[in-house]
Image 1 (cartoon, rainbow, N blue to C red):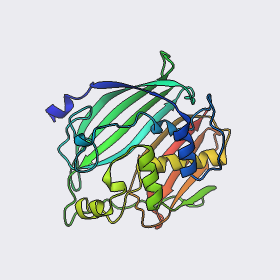
Image 2 (cartoon, one colour):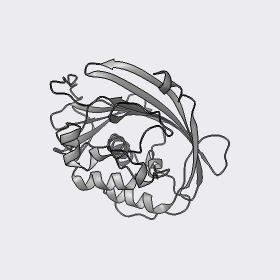
Image 3 (cartoon, rainbow, N blue to C red):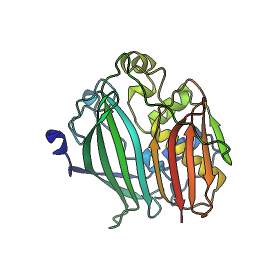
Image 4 (cartoon, rainbow, N blue to C red):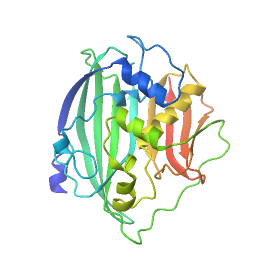
Length: 282
């Protein structure tokens, strides 16, 4: 752990331009009607993930489809990597045409003992600044968890039942094409999302895993469909249980009595909670 914690404070800065084609492509992927995407169009919440893509050379890719470890991220010696959750502050809009700088910093590295072995959590802070601004438009914390290889007899944590009776509901079929398109849009080479033989035979899962960020995007898309004029100030989500491509999933939302908080959650076909989230509005 001493070697891994030495990564705390390490940072990198990247630059990108918010171009319209990824916006149109994700809108099509989420099954929205075609609409003009002109300069100045604000990005919906979380759509900044379409930019600052991980452009690693093919020779730098590891066996799981991610870049080999030890560059910006610490070289955690555990084979399975998952997106555990994120927290966001949306301080000002990011718009099509903006020149954006993203500064990423390793905020923390911690080790915990889980029921199936050691876990290593890496927290990354991202700050996005537009057009040379001194203050960030978006502040994001990204939680990554690393786990050991799945072993025979491993006991998964007991599932949690999702809340019922949500006023907002939408069923999604996470088929191979949806997962492939989202992987392509985010240049995500992680094989658990598209390589069925790898995910079942090497990582021991029953099917392709639906991207955590895709589920989070679907939750925020539900909010956008139900409350198109809502101005999201903060959002946080936690991945609770893997979602596979074998069955439909459901995204749910429930505005709270204070008029600002909106509880959002995803569930699998059996009614188990797979992602828990909350958005707050200005």
